[in-house]
Length: 193
Image (cartoon, rainbow, N blue to C red):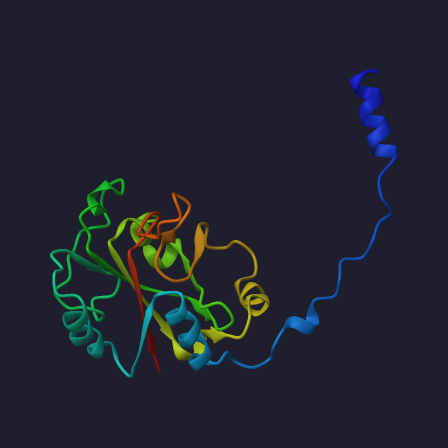
């Protein structure tokens, strides 16, 4: 049987067209519950601090991270005195970063995930190469479910983006839990508002 005959046979034996299922029942009109979001993030191994202003970040970082030598922050207000000029290079300049503080676009209460795009992280590798990661999100940006998150995100307007939930961990090798295998060893979330 020729290639054309095989492709024609496949084309003539397609299943009947069906409408996609209606997912509108999974969408929510209201905001997500910050308490539920916090509970899920903590169950994943992260820590959450509710803050009223960015000035609260610096003392919390000093209290919970005692051995930091290089910290980068997207916004100067997150941590005055953080490293500058780190955006220049191919990403390898970030291999010695101990803590990166990045804004997140939105959080998801049902699974503790935070949506971060290249626009927020500035250098794509930053949240994955740093030893510790801190994400800052607005309390109003917490949504109930992933359905709501995808509805908010819409199309791919920002290029690269990722949902980050908890510190990186794997137990694939001999069932030993390894933190930081594919990304940061710890995750801190600052909820502002």
